[in-house]
Length: 322
Image 1 (cartoon, rainbow, N blue to C red):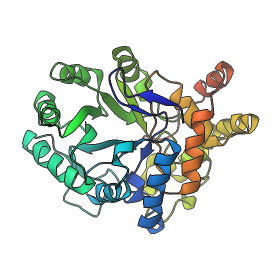
Image 2: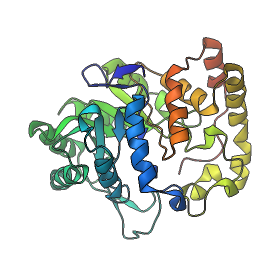
Image 3: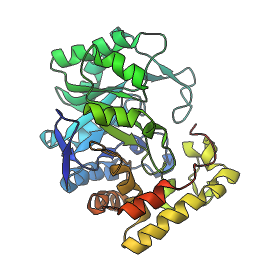
């Protein structure tokens, strides 16, 4: 697979990474299978998808444990990323992001890194990310605690998720920001306004999560009834009966380009994301070998200027993200 670096000073990674959340959290609970997920993790590394992304809150904790088992013996071949700063709220049965609480207290960061390393079966992570900024804690204090993990050798680099340019600048004044992870896809383009251009200018890697619109852009979901029972996406505004029908126009355009290119809709959607910046590394999630290979194939798809313009002109989706 083609490679790039995580920003100007970061490690080398494949241009497509792997998000691991869905292996244990939020999506298709009845379809999870640890053995298959473990095989997918190792297959991803063999395909060159060397950026592996997880978080302590996924599960909670079970995702890091799974990733740790999956990378046993091949840890030195990957750039391992995890996150801190979210925890399940009082309703621990709530699926997905709803009901989660932000925790940016320095003592929480200091404790969590050690727990994550134990679950991941490693002595360091390559990228430690603040999952969300805690409005009750100055970002300088939280970021200072993450910087301590670098000084202690427990993390090589640190990054942020879902932040504003102002928050980025405040963090940078304390310690270099290696990456920003935020949602970016053909139906979520908010980051293109200011955060992604700022990252590009500063040489900061940008890691789009949900680059396939939570699977919608693959063309596999024409109705909310196509989603598995218990799947968190059934609660999201863009997957409701009226909005999912309206949003099919976006998928139709992606499919048309895919047909012309002898590619899949997922590959076209990922190629558009990759084209948005110098250090953009999408991290689509999957727990299926077939879709993993499909996503990896996006590394070989380069869209023309005309195709990019056609996709840029697509309408905004109906419905909010959450």
